[in-house]
Image (cartoon, rainbow, N blue to C red; front, side, top):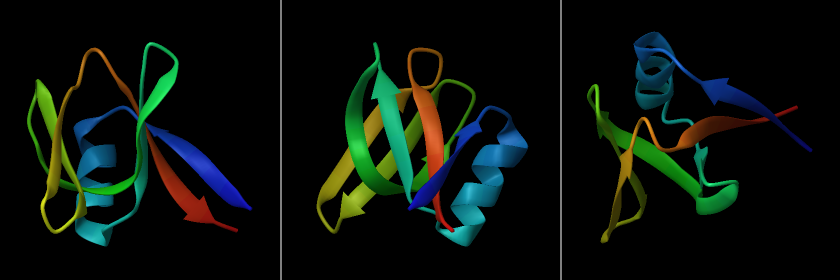
Length: 71
């Protein structure tokens, strides 16, 4: 079973980026990205990658981000 922690601050995103933690992304209560890592982020956008050629750009204000941690 996994634990989910919401990413809110720049420090949260930076920690997930450095550790390579898998994240889930929700938009309008729907999952749009199930298991990927953060490649980079800024004040408006978070870029995630789930495979070699699969990059996704998410609006930071319009999405909710959760890191996935195993118990």
